[in-house]
Image 1 (cartoon, helix red, strand yellow):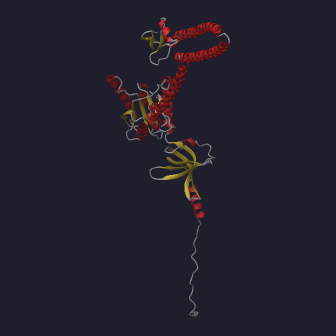
Image 2 (cartoon, helix red, strand yellow; image 1 turned 45 degrees about the horizontal axis):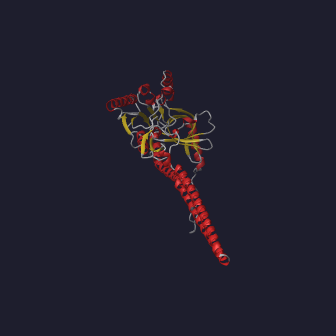
Length: 470
């Protein structure tokens, strides 16, 4: 067949049809992966450490399960009511049962949890409960044997690992709240094989050290208490503090023991035997330093408060002194004497005025008589008038002398009364005035005198100092 001739404008298939291929959307691919995981893996058990724990308001719990090489996202839905949610905590090692699936909106695989078990919880928990019941029956947990901690400890013993986080927390709190507190470290392991024996040995060592120091220097260098502590961890990590040898060492300790092992939710046998249990190492350090810390705050405020009270007392005493001074000035005998002297001056002035007025009147009358005498019989009248004048002079003299004697008697009587009212007359009759030798306060009743109080007695001549006997 002859080939078809193409024109110069025929270029063949510039865009050949696409080869046959299957293209999936992201949703389709994710759905296939999800189905493959659910079919091939499905429900399984997995173990690891819980981290990034997050509880949503909806009731769902999200967290990550990790080990040394990888991590797995996990979710515990609210509808899983048979699961003990309290077992999930950051840092806790658990064994989970769940279904491996894919969360399609994020394209990540996760484990939908349906069951939770703590690693090794079965055997360890049984041993814990058995030992707990045994020691409780022997009275190691009895509240009546618990000893109170000293309020102001000066030196304590510390049983912990020298490289752990607990010792750093304790030292940080002590340095902040009571830097003067001395700490004697009995280093030991707090985890692993043989750790319990080392902890018990450290407790006994600190007791022996305290007893030796007390015998040598009269308790000046003896320990006040012992603090046993370590940071948080799993039940296996804290198991050394659940050993009977540690419990016996705490019970036999002559010094009060504070146990601060793990976190707030962790309880060990040592917590039950110890005299005081603290939730964390930091909390234990705060309990031990509470007395000094609270007292330092009180002492920081007491100086200002004492200053305020002193100023207030000085103001009150100053007001009392002013009032007493004013009262003394009002009732002082000198003031009454001055009042009577002033009255005497007024009476004397009035008397002189009366005398002058009488003399003037008599003078006028004498002049009138002289004039009348001049008009009538002068000699007789003169003689009569002279006699009348002489009589008037005598009467006037007698009246003046009588008035003067009367006022003089009144003045003497007043002066005598004033003198009798003065303290010198009372002292002259054999009496004395007893006052407080320190304050000068006059003592009027025997109940105002205290045993041992220093007294001052004023006599007519001189003063006597004495001290009251009970």
